[in-house]
Length: 281
Image (cartoon, rainbow, N blue to C red; front, side, top):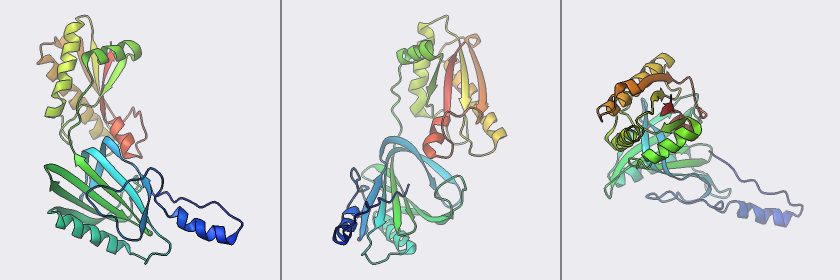
């Protein structure tokens, strides 16, 4: 997350001095996080923006997964700038969030050994601005800070029945990003269109039989994750049969965290592991 750009070694002292200032320019391709002004005396070293992704915010007691447009940039303090403490950085963003009419959810130490944020005190806030729900995290440490803002939104389900059939015929399975209420098997409204596409797929291919397989990341207890994945697979099966599909063409099974497809040590990896797969029988 916090990548420092290192200046190349230069034999001539004068050139070395001038190169220090150059290396403290903003890194190529970096962008300031919208909605917030950069703190004085800092330059941008890394940007990791995504049109749609999931990010977990610490609210002081638990992690809350928020999906939407992610803006994330790491800022490093310039060498000759006046030193700024982690506390000063946190208080700066607490004030900024409150000035926007937002709420501070936490100013607390985060302590998850699986996360690179572990051991640091984070500021988490939420703001309603221009009809958008913004989640904010300021993560300071060692003369730098990473600012993350997520514009919360539901992902548009763009996969069609034809796309599913192509994947099933080519790979034997298709992975779907079906959203459920947190810790439950209730399918969220934004995922109803994808259920409709599955129904359309099965109606258009009357001999097709599917296994509906639920998967989770490795956060939490393995036994509970397996139970939850089974419940979610059955929930999808129930929704499909309500669309007029014979239950005899379907089976439901949950594997919990047993079959990851990505690295559970990263949020991006965990998001990929939380999935429902349709497997051709």
